[in-house]
Amino acid sequence: VRQVSTVAVLRAAVHEARVAGRHTVLVPTMGALHEGHLALVRLAAEHGDHTVVSIFVNPTQFDRREDLAAYPRDLDGDLEALGELGSATPAVVFAPTVADIYPRPPLTSVRVEDLTDRLCGATRPGHFDGVATMVTKLLHLVQPDAAVFGRKDFQQLQVVRRLVADLDLPVAILAAPTVREADGVAMSSRNRRLDEDGRQAARALSQALRAGVLAARDQRASGGRLSSVAVQGAAEEALAAAEGIEVDYLEVLLPEELSPAPRWLPADGQLLVAVAAYVGGEVRLIDNVVVGDQEDEERLLAATA
Ligand code: AMP
Image 1: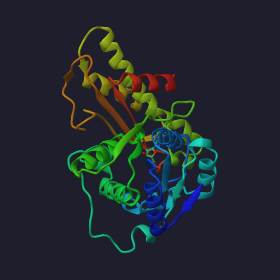
Image 2: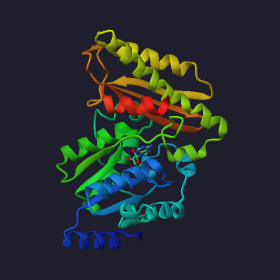
Image 3: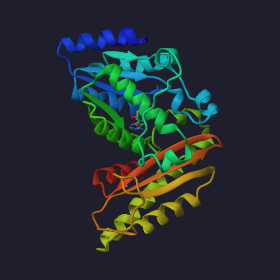
Image 4: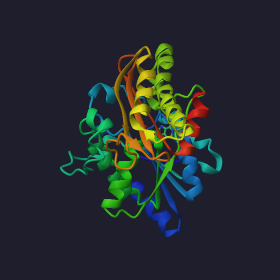
């Protein structure tokens, strides 16, 4: 793995790859890598022959100073894990400092409207402006043919897709499914901050999603339309029974627009069920499933059984 920490060296490496006719795929991360990240890197290797993994804890997307300070960092461990991916090992790991990325306080920001009104956009002010601006900067720095994002951060994925479309950025956005622990908990760098009780309590998020999917399946089995209220009710009920978590939001929305779902949808309609909760007091976790996306449903049910 070639570790690059400055913008100048990154630009040179990117230029070299382009001249050599390489197909570059970018995987943006904040480090403290887990299997979910590694799955993104493997997907990148399937779609190109020059993978660039960025590792940068972007301060502008944190709305709480404590969260930024407590965010796990492990560059040595990350480099080791990436080096063990065999043929999927990235060509370049771009791990800049804050001063490299923001040599002076930026006066420019990228803002995606509407899609950022709800969910994490509502409870984390400024978060998606930070994300959208950072992703735009990375896409310009690396100029990849494609970039990979996880469905774990579903709203982020939709925001990135939209900004790429709106700004005509010449990059394909690839989505990777959520990788889960054996008990169904979505992998997250933040899971490292949980103690044993917190780790147990974290199961409530994926279990709530499971309840939502099962409710939708019941409705389909009985030949009816899809009731967004019933899906939300089932997920809420599961969440209300959980201990050791404080719910930030549980919402059922249309997955494309991230706008409120109508009361009734056709039997084959799709609903995003998204949940965020504080576990163990201060660790904020998120998870989601798209009801009506058969693969997403199957993956969640298999992982939470
Ligand atoms: P982060 O380091 O949390 O900013 O995440 C970097 C990328 O990895 C984002 O595109 C995330 O959606 C993705 N990611 C994080 N956790 C998972 C997971 N459990 N499964 C799949 N992708 C993930």
